[in-house]
Image (tube, rainbow, N blue to C red):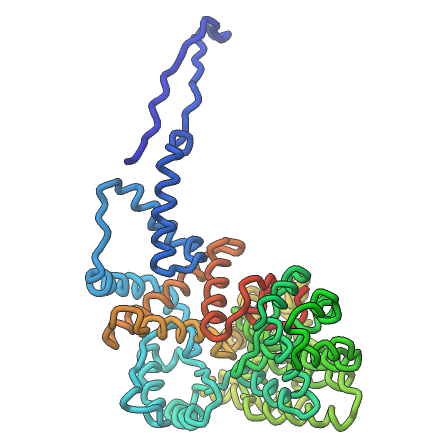
Length: 548
């Protein structure tokens, strides 16, 4: 039942104002919340909770802006509201919502001509490859279909992971569309670097030993309970596929080293049955081995720059202009971290080999145009200069326009002419995103400005697609009502693009924007890598080793 506030009744007082008019005091109007029946509110809360508990709805969904909108609209409608049936949710309402989302996305599409498109930012469709397989020709045909939907002139690059079929498909696409660049996921590149480093014979034993220690703690209730009493942090689990998480797991062991050593050497542990087992005795000895703890701490220090770079490329902001410089700086930093020359050469060779396999001229061109590095003299690096030349020729076929861009680039490099020289432009080089900087300060070189915005707007990883894969797996799960391929695709289209629209429409600092990001990272983390619920550090998001 909807309770409405009573209309307040004016009450007069004997006094009057100086004008002779009677003084009228308004009684305080009570709000809806003040008239709320606390018993009914508690009953409603209980019913909402029943729905969450019975249908395994994530608690975080209570923070969803769409959940709040739903509750508000039901309250406005009143007690006689009848919710839609499951059939209408999966048919007519889904079709209606898809049309609404398509209409809402039109404003995003209008920016494609100016900013360019990476084929991964906007969910278009899905393809059932269970019968056709994923050969290079089939993948290329699907990519070409998506390119035609978006418009070939709007597409700057395609980002894919580095598996052989994608590389072969990329070659086909670049032959069909010479102006489109196929790049390979930098997060995948860094994950492979960490995989190779983790397999080195002087690093793997430390990871395996730490993993065994974590398993020993977590698999024995008494030991785990005693650890929980002593630590506010949880130990993270090993992953067979996400190699950065394994170093994050190792980092957590290092952070908890004082607690772990104190526990394993304590009288409380000595009295536990687990302490008398061969494994318990082994870890008790390990706790007293200062050399081992120093060695795993050194491993964490070595991989820190790589995991930090992974955090950068995994961010929601376009960062393709940062990749080239960051990779160079990361490899250079290893010289000071790895004192043994043979070991340095080993790790350096891994980094260079993987980087060469994933490098694209687009990385060099973006580095050339990123205002953060305006004073780096990138053009003196032959690889960067050649990458810039390749991209300029592919993206700008007209030779006269290319000459204009080269002239405008010369002014940009010096930072002494035109709009690039103003104090605000120099100050904002390090403060705002690269694309925003060019929009604000690139107007004296309009041809270069347009090209810079298109290049610097591109993605460099496929990490954002993990949420789509997670949603699609959830949609296709046997736990849900079976959906046809098209209906499942429509559901993912609506879900993915509702999130994209919510993010683009939220202002900075909007709590709902933060909810979207947290929800996506939580969903991916829960699907791909289970993290203890008590973990108070956001390492179930992009892994990083410098968390407090």
